[in-house]
Length: 448
Image 1 (cartoon, rainbow, N blue to C red):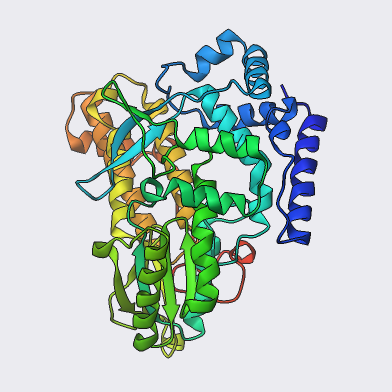
Image 2 (spheres, rainbow, N blue to C red; image 1 turned 180 degrees about the horizontal axis):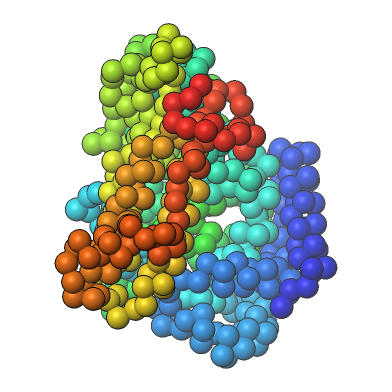
């Protein structure tokens, strides 16, 4: 597959496009389509698709079957079809997955593997152009941006006195974006007719649900490789208008957003402006998740990006005069962790070796802790680790058809506890105006 030199050529292409777009904010790019089917770009796209794995699309062809067929052969066919203009994406396979903590189900569209490769190649080419335009308030699905960058802004702005928060998200954002308006937003920067035709084809490929193909005039299907970028391209219009018509500081991670304000009046005006701007874009807020909250000691908190944010007072007697915005895993995040650990230690896995179950638990705990360690989360880490220990003890007891007390003896009271990792001491307390990547280990929750 792609050599280091070929990867460098793709990166250099992206840097060149980014610099050109940054240098001239009004430039429209016209020679891009041939970059999509460049062999090194397609190989880079395949590498991304393979790394993400994912299920088969409507053609039921899996990653493994593509590898058996021959990756080189498939990429040659895709390049030939794109070059000839004969490429046609297949309808995505529609599945529904449960929304955590809710009875609702989230629609997910799974494109065919070959279509995911083309989408990834398209994103590789056009992302640098739009990345040059995106504003600092946008954090979702962007290179070198993460949830913790958005969370750091919340800490910083609260420290500056913006403690009235508008909390909401865009209702069914991925399914509601109008195709024609999205294409108009893309055309602000791209005038390559072949590339625009390809994007239009990807948007209108439709979804296959219960054997029937449905085509819509709105939506960039959630689950598509290029969909997060297209969502950001469209919501960039919100970010741009907010600079002149908005109130307070907007923090947006894809369709989840907060507005931080100094007063309730400013927050109410911000909510009015938010509704109005989104209505002009053909979108609306999810009303049941929309509210105005004051961050204050003893008050209710705000849930954002998996964390519960609350104003608290320092526990140490020496620092009792200090109040600060703390955060820890939300109730939903804790419930998701328990649900996942129950699945990893369920009855249907009793025939697996205990070591394998411990490895799976450890892998999950490392990922969970890696995200939530940047918070005042020591107590919650203890709860999660103790729950994992309890589930492992119960698993061992069931596997040996013994009592729970036997399971606890076999796990909790043995040196090393069968290798289950310890989460103690891994918490990093966030600090205002100090980039989260540079914050040293705080050595415990609530330390200031």
